View (cartoon, rainbow, N blue to C red):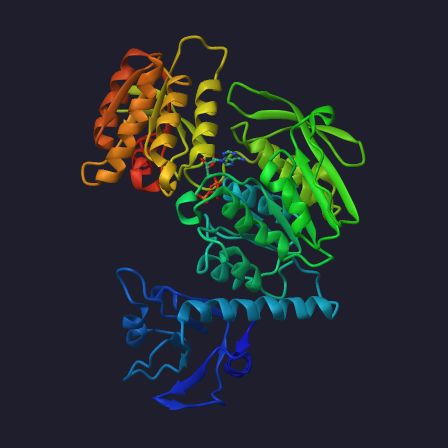
Length: 500
Ligand code: ATP
């Protein structure tokens, strides 16, 4: 972060500083990092005490070592560490992060190093796109991007606090489970370029309707100023309407459709509205897409992604749109994307494994799941080594959470989809969580409808493991692991890949 004094925090209205219980407006404090984890509170850091479900950060203020400031919502007695007293420590974290980004912008306005914030949202693909984009941009200049999917009201500010004087690009992932959350994140780091990947039914439970999801995602383009650039998926009807919801004078559409098939983009007030296309996709033996890109100026080139999954074509097109808007030579992006073989953990990670005495291929996509990403994972399962007729395809799938009233229907649909894309469907529930078990039952009911695959309903990952081992002894198997985080499939991935 950019070094910040206690006086700056007070002047920004974030709180008041107390030393030994006495208000000290002129305390001589300078912070150079911020953390919410007391174990990482080193020299020059501010520790923000956050109340979690199980732990309250305020309990650690008394034992801080090295921190120069504790941000608290009530004063802790008996500690020499100065305390910034605020009403709400999570909000204060956002306020300190906003101050950091404002200071960085001020440096840019004074002619020091340019600075660009790129915000990414969508129901699926945010983390993958963020990983791809930061891999490209960091080849060119200092880039800050979150680890994993730090995309909420704690993760985004913590990442924004990594921005310093030298940072050229800040790639900000913005997630939401309710209307207003992305709007809040954009007040901390207002994007200069906003990407909307897709409006799906992820987290429908929190939103109630797809329109609310659309409105929530649109907050990222509403935050753009007239100098901003909106990068929008032209193939998603809900994203198309966002052209009318932004002041941005430049829109870059991305699409996988041929020109003739393209629905007409919505009219907008944008001065410039251009389209970048990715067409003629082919998948190689490892499910890596190769496709042809047509830039808005009409020039073409071919790209083969290093990572697997046809759905990643959309994520790559969004990245190439940013590259185009920033005038970066596309061969730089193409080279990075074609050599990038992995993204954040448990997302489309493929590996051949030897587990006990069995050998099989795993597609570990176990980080999380919603209907869009489930279908994408199952598509990958059914197309990997498509020419090899001996391959036996096993879908080990768990529940998808936060889908609201449509959840049972969505699980039956996915079950049916799985059974037409796999030889064996293993629906994984939980021995202790009736909700996960009920949803797994819906998957197996849906899968049984088609009568095209063997279907099993199991209550834990050990049973799934045993079934996969049986398959792997009898067949040449590819196994997909896919489910919401709660379904525990990432532990099964770790068990297998740890043995790789
Ligand atoms: P979350 O909000 O759960 O963190 P996310 O939006 O960050 O998700 P990723 O983590 O990139 O998305 O991917 C989540 C899952 O969706 C992975 O299984 C990935 O393979 C799949 N996925 C990624 N991009 C797409 C896409 N464009 N269409 C469908 N599925 C996708």
